[in-house]
Amino acid sequence: MFRKLACLVALVALVSTSSTGCIGRMAVSAEVMKFNLRVAETRWGREAVFLILYIIPVYGFAGLIDLVVVNSIEFWTGTNPVSGESRLAKVGDQKRVVGPNGGQAVSTLREDGSIDVEIREPSGTEHFINLIRQNGGMVARDADGQQLGRLDEHGAVHLAPRVLTARAAY
Image (cartoon, rainbow, N blue to C red; front, side, top):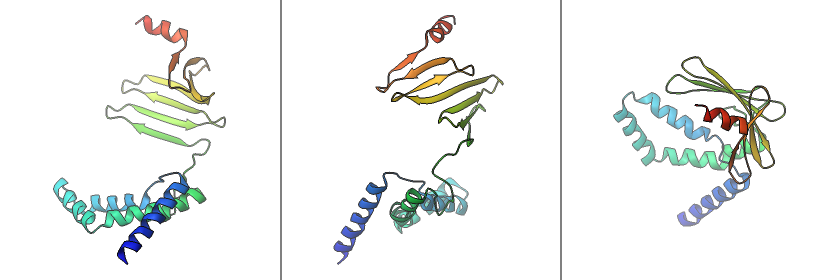
């Protein structure tokens, strides 16, 4: 009986994950992890809680619920029912990343499908680049729209001649 149930659960998990084609946010598993971080303040305490939740198997059930139910709902509706987050970026959406040295990068999705990336170094120096998919690859442009380089469909990088000249001057 247990063997048949295990096979059925494995089959359902396989079909649901292969038919959705994405992993999703794994929001239930993330909530278990957040719980783990809130319960204990020290590394050893967190490790003990992690081991208990893993042995019981809270993490395993959370992952199974994510894979079979939550991520499937996210795929078909576009919104994760646990986190409430949309899986699709919208025009104007921004994502900010702060590096360990204090540098920042902000990316913004544009109407044409390209992404503007603004980078600010800790010294205050700012850089701008626009990335857009083109012919199976990607093209990088500066703030004036001049091509800096491209990544072709085979993964080869091609820098614009003026970029090569500018780098040679260093």
